[in-house]
Image (cartoon, rainbow, N blue to C red; front, side, top):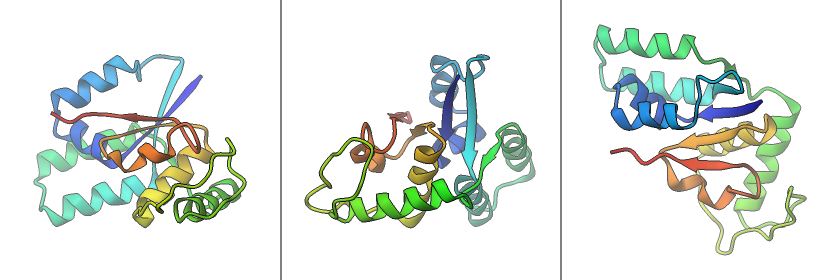
Length: 153
């Protein structure tokens, strides 16, 4: 079974019923029995905050609620996630750590938001492929996680 973690940008695309989001979902066979799609509690919070900030109406909120109910949320309050967060944080800041591939840390350091670090740590800890519209995860691909960039139209 292949596990996929859907990032906030993809959740947004699905909520907006964007063709690029539906195509990504279909091309990756996320409805297949051999695939399991999840989101993170961090992405869940981000998309709810976005809905509040932008004053989404009832129709869009109902659609979002339906999407979120259909995706299990991966928790960050687990030792594997907490340890992954600490190691990825140090690694992206240029510090050598025990990483899965023995890759040297990026030079110069790569700045990531705290939420993105939590999302990356969650994908790593749960061995999930991260699907995101955010290129800010590219430097982690093949080292800490498998990453697929989804190009929004």
